[in-house]
Image 1 (cartoon, rainbow, N blue to C red):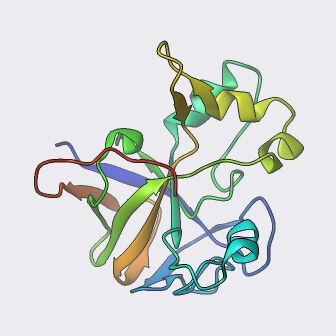
Image 2: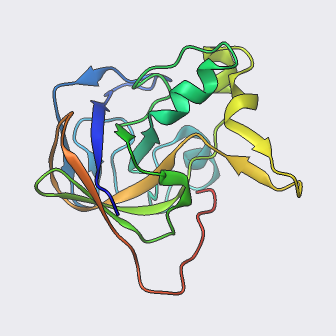
Length: 181
């Protein structure tokens, strides 16, 4: 597979829908993005904490492919890196087609294990009216299609910067398609 690249990295120490872009982020094994509100061993997303605060955090790192920004622009939406709350914006990789358990090597050291699809919420429409319909829809068979990126856990820590390569290690067969986490 062709390597992709990191376009932008973002983090925020406070709850907010968007995350400011940074010169670099540091991924911490088993925790997530250093200083980010969603870092931790157990869930940090408010809705998940309300359900069960002891759940393992399978959403330590949020990745989105920048090609999605071009797609939603065709419907009149303006989205840039960090706007949808992602930590890593990539280019050149079809993130949504990766199987569960894929390892993404980001830069020289960091490795993120893909756990599933982001399940976008209504906050997206508060950010830009109508955007939720652009990132969640249905296919011809009526199945839900989620396009707002993928989630992962930090397998190996390291610093990630814009311009870093992203390479993929697929898990052993049979591959398990991504589902929402």
